Amino acid sequence: MIRFKKAAALAVSAAMLFPAVGCSSSSSGSSSSSSSSASSGSKSSTSTPGSDSSGSDEKGLTYASIKLGEDYKDLKESIKFLHHKTDRASDGTMDKLVAEFNKMYPDIKVEMEAITDYAEDSKLRLTTKDWGDVMFIPSIDKAELSTYFIPFGTTEEMSQYINFANNWELDGQCYGIAYMGNAQGILINSKVFKDAGVTEMPRTPDEFINALKAIKEKTDAIPLYTNYAAGWTMGAWDAYLGAITTGDTTWINQKFVHTKEPFKNNGDGTGAYALYKILYDAVANKLIEEDYSTTDWESCKAKINNGEIGCMVLGSWAVAQMKAAGSHPDDISYIPFPISVNGKQYATAGPDYCYGISKTTSESKQKAAMVFVKWMVENSGWCELEGGYPISKTAFTTFSFNGVEVVENDPALAGEEDFMNNMNSESELAFNAGGDKKIQDIITNAFNDTKSFDDIMAEWTSKWNDAQEELDIKVLY
Image (tube, rainbow, N blue to C red; front, top):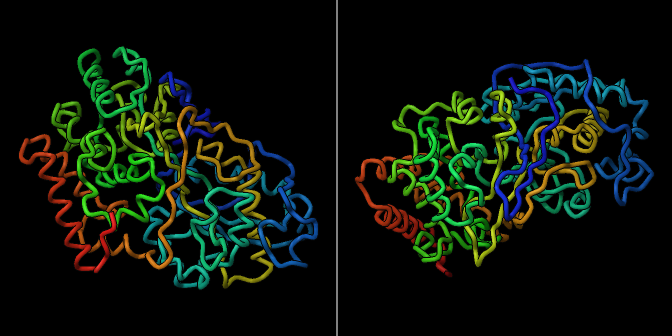
């Protein structure tokens, strides 16, 4: 169970390795809940930048038009919220948040249902059009957004209030607002690193591998825990493709599909080659667990908390879970990924699940849902509690990633939105799309010395080029 307490700041100095970090949980546990009791700290009302005071009736229902604590105070309604946070349903957090919401809006009742297999079940529920009023938008085509959901406002307007307003964008309208964001770096036990004599933040692949070697030589901890057996954790490595490894925010979604040799060795510790070679080298040098096939996701949380593991490659969402897994939360930190482009490090951030409001529910329920979502984003403190990258541009946050440029990868070019999905499918490499096996194969080949890293990259390049030819995608780079 994750404890309900305020997360510490996600802070990383460019010069020093071990400041306090707090990040978010993105796990799905196993329970469901419904609505209203107890307490949690939050603000009493919100003013928003550029918000007009007319409320939503005169200009239509939008996020920007609502003044929390003033508009819709006399609205009496019941709404249902579907979500994936079974852990937060189990530990009482969700009920506490709704209880706080009801202090401002006592006549808007919120029923909640936490779904364990949310990724699949939510899509099935969505098609019934009788799932409720607010949900976290599942994996659907953007073209379907207007079929199921109402917009919060134009993307241009919403960009004044939230980060990642274009994540669920269709025809210039914003259909989804994230409950929290995730940054990409490396989860570490700072005490293990200190005990190994590592006091400077690794900024390059070589420095990182040397740090892992020091951990192996000077401590009893597993330097890098792969989480091989879980499978889905392997896909985490793909999340570092793009600006982190190239310094180019257009690479992953615009240039990658048009690149002839995206996996070539740049010779300077950057690019996709350098990213995956970190894993290969760590495994080849036996800087991982003794038997990668028996790793266990649940038990690794306590292990890194108590110093049995040095680090894991996961998004910042995992930090809150690791902090809560034992009696040493202050030893858990989060550092930028060890690749520097022309001496500069980059971190990418992106949205987690996003709130969506049902198009088929009643107008009254849509109003109540819009008020509830805005309160959750602006006043609940949930993103801060999870230590997530901030969503609201006005709400309080302690999140900082000092000394590193935090960027967002640019979306695909107009008319090429499906190129990456098609390339992933045709090549069967599935980058950022469940391509866990290709990462597991890196571990297997490195551990058993059955295939060189260059041979693996050559195979990926061949598959990529074949897919480009089959799909008639032009090679431009």
